[in-house]
Length: 141
Image (cartoon, rainbow, N blue to C red):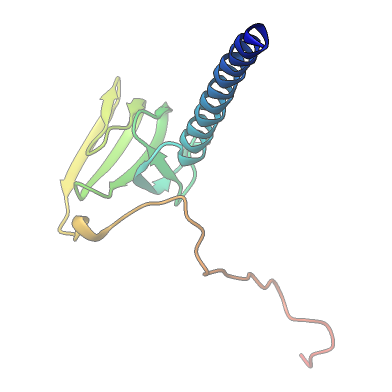
């Protein structure tokens, strides 16, 4: 009997260790998945651009690097600092409140805004739109 009970406790301890490892693995995967879905936080909006690297009304995130050609210009509006930047040429490293511009020119203007209430999220909203090009067939001209 004594031999059987010690074997039971050894198997039980081994099973407990495996269960703990499995739990840690699941928790780790969940943490990685939530970090991956959260993604980078958008800090500025592209108000204008003639660069193929960024599009009009695109959100940019802190740390993003944008390379502009010598005749390319973008206009960024920062949501937290209410700074509006017009950047021509060079390399732009997007910051949280303003950009770091290398080998280019930047003009900054601090605008009046209510930055405390603005928030960019990855959440879906119930709003949408539709583009209609031309008149539907069958309507009188």
